[in-house]
Length: 157
Image (cartoon, rainbow, N blue to C red; front, side):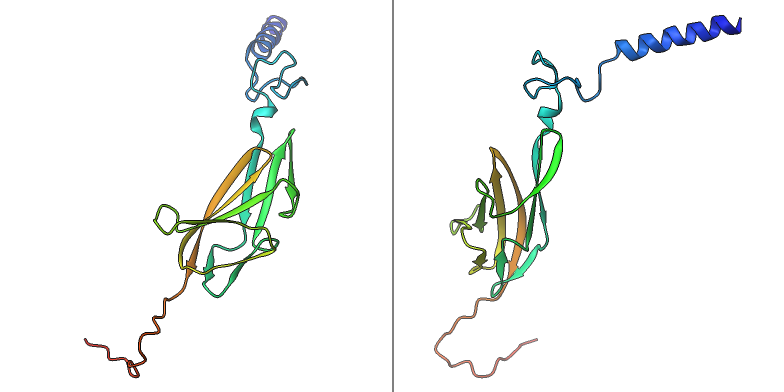
């Protein structure tokens, strides 16, 4: 009886393991779709771009430093690797005040990008057809030079 149950368990295990589809896709090589024949979702579907910001908050007198404030990770061909922001093909764009009339889009070509306006900004990175973005906040005050008549500020309660 014990041999019969063991044989039945082995046969059942073989049916389960061979009959179920793999959760991620085929292991075989080919065109990046997992299977060599192209049907199925393999590791080629898991390629992505991932941004790791080192800062989310800036002041208006500070600047975005491309090499220190941003880490770019890319997953290609099953490997996750870090790429430098100055790698050819990497486009870093800063969108100031997105969705407003004063929206300005600037591509970061230098190592530093100074901020001129306070508010919410979007940092968008594009590399090899993939793109990712995240939001940063720039704080600052607008000082109106006025006519110089405000020598002492009065706060009314």
